[in-house]
Image (cartoon, each protein chain N blue to C red):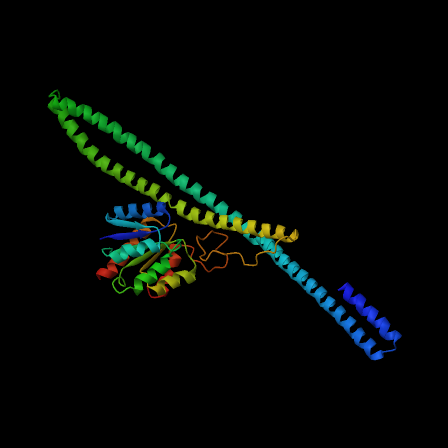
Length: 240
Length: 124
């Protein structure tokens, strides 16, 4: 371009020396045209720079939004996970602690009765003692039925307590997604600030489904059912 | 009575299966999402479907819609057992034709009550 400009300048000088004004004007127009092209190129460069800056700004604000909302949210969700696992462990331990003495009593009684029963089989038991043993046996049957009911209820409690694994699993998956999102945004930010690679402009993927309700996080808007009673009320209002 | 239990968490499938056993339903089948559940349903012989909502592959709501739009499965009773608790979701499930909706975490008594209620309606 510089050589173009130089030859145009030479032509201009010779035209002026020849007093060829028409030619000189024409050359001056050509020089102006060249300058315009340069100007457009510069505007293009500036526009590109502005665009990049805007994109980096939007990534920046995404990180800010994450720091403001998503990270505290994630912290509350993880606290809820701790609370749920603690509750499940408590429920399981309580059931086990309550069942151990029940099982110990059953075992002690059965030992005692089986000793008596052996004596009876060996014909070593006087009739009076046999009568007492019969009464003991009746009582034992009654007691063991109650004990077995207790054991059944305790086992059912232990079973239900394991439901935490599903809920906490779903919550932790969401937090992992958030951490991945955050990582992606930070990588983009680093790429932009070093101006090596343009950032990906796709928005962060949000989970399609709201998932488990974390008290204090997901029930703020009041658009969730916080108990089975809420669900039942809603369904019955729909004619269920 | 053959019952299909669909949930992506095996722990939850075991819990539901054990509760069903307590209620006297010992004939259960399992699937971990809608995609694996549908072929089992289409093969026939399933009388009751208990499904989660949020599952990879095919969600419970899509499974419910597929069941309702299939001529020979349309009347299958479906109970949804899910952590999804937004009002709009419960309404969506109701509109898709669910027979019962239980939110997690639930109690054994709740599950029993909902299952019995569904059977009462079918029998009555």
